[in-house]
Image 1: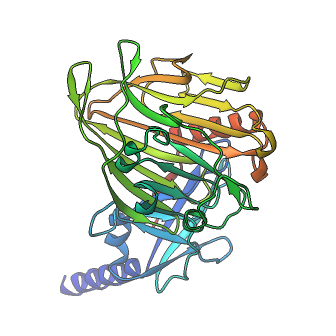
Image 2: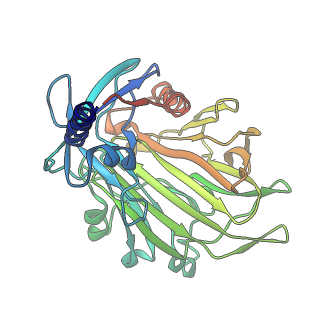
Length: 368
């Protein structure tokens, strides 16, 4: 009996030692299109692998997979973001092993821009965006409320260089900002919607970066309270953008339950629209903007959509906060001159594929 107990203990210790040296994970994509980057639970990996640095290896080809530890403002990681898509209706196996990972090229970035009246700008290797801060309210001719788009045709990060040069409304080979926002929701902004009216907040008052690249940038914007049909409302917006994505994730937390409108400003000239209430997909391929080309804007909304309509100078998706007073959706843009998405059909299909993947994400199983 003593020998049997010692043998069992030795086997257990050997298995524990092996498990701490490597963790094997299977990733299965059920969707009809390739996945975006994949998230894993950090605690689950750390519980098996132990503390310390690690590398991730693609079992099929032996190549190292880039990754980023996601903190979401915490002191310890909460997720691991894998820099590998998974092909449509396919599986891959990855192995976590102890060791020092290779450096990862920075493909996302975001920062507070005090030198331009409190802007907050963020970007990846595809597109760039900004939202407006309190200082801009002192210049009514420039002031704006919604989400702004900067069209890029370079994979380089350009926010710092464009602000430095000042005139980013002219294309000097990398792209430009020609998107007009004004006193609208712009490219997928959100506001309470009551009595057939959009109750705009003013511009954000404080910001905090929660994660900063290389594969994801996440930040939080806070706003002053304002009156919505006689009720005092406040909102906090947590926004993230992944490498290779056209859309930013928007997690909007209100202090009260409220109906909301997510909107895309509509131009006066004819464009092409997609309004799929049941799927929560809203898309707009704008009219051509002279020699600057054409911008596509779109939203994928995870909360149930009550209705979509063209109203108040926007394409509007009317929804409501969930039990946590939160609305979660994705919004973003594409530019035909970037060469990846060049017409309305391609843009609308991109949005529909994003919706499908969000509803049926990559399945993760720890096999060892």
